[in-house]
Amino acid sequence: MEQRLSIITLGVKELDKSEQFYTKKFGWSKTEESNESIIFMQLNGIKLALYANAALAEDANVEHQETGNASYKGFTLAFCTRSEQEVDELFEDFKKQNVKIVKEPEKVFWGGYSGYIADPDGNLWEIAFNPYLQMDEVGNIK
Image 1 (cartoon, helix red, strand yellow):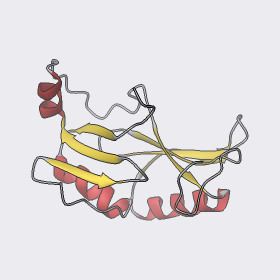
Image 2: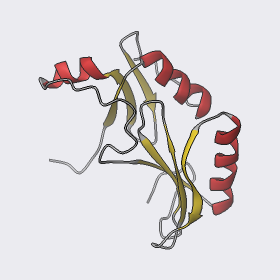
Image 3: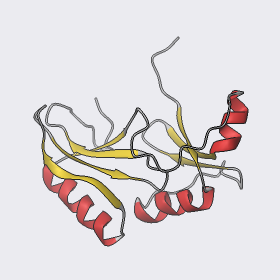
């Protein structure tokens, strides 16, 4: 199997609410493949998909359990920036848009600078500057 990640699918409680979060708060765009049941957003080399929790459980043939807005689900997503200043600028913008701030940006033990926000379903996004990662001109990690 090739070493690759193609799509991250987040099970969401309210598709419309999650769509608004990612399009309005993050400023991302839906792709043409999106429809009334699933939202796709093209990221750097992968897609983010938003899909109803119950439908995702049914598709995977597992029992659907409502998780509410738990703040930690055993994983996080990360958006890496090119500087500490960019982290701070994003957090200022998130605050103006009333995005839930879970952890304010700060210097962290591994040598970077990061903070956390949550989407409407409690999925955690780390917004981080990692001085050890090299990024290309479009933000892909080398």
